[in-house]
Amino acid sequence: MAKKDDRPIDVGLAALTGADEATATAFWKKRMELIASIPSEIARVGALTPQLRELTRVANDGERERLTRARVIAFSQLSADDRQKVGAARAAAWKIDLEVMQKDQSLVDKILPTVDAGVRSVYPTPPDR
Image (cartoon, rainbow, N blue to C red; front, side, top):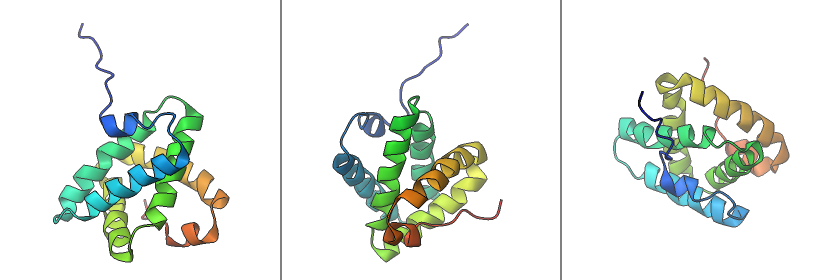
């Protein structure tokens, strides 16, 4: 029987474990800006989905919530154009990995009421599923 490979899919995200909120938010903002700069929508989806998958693999619930909160805050700091591109990629990811997206969305739904209204107002709602 083969040994299970439990190495992180995204080493950069895995390295955020234990980092302060400012560092985690800066990481996510840079990552999302890079994703938004990808010229192809399908490639943006392909860049975003593994990161969300890796985030849902974080074993510690508190750490996963903290990193997701930093991602939500970072999203609100993007330019309107970048938010649109990343939001569209996130919406398309629902067709790629429904289980990961549902798990992520349940945590986002828990976090959104705890962030300020400016952050909540720009975060995308999930597509009808």
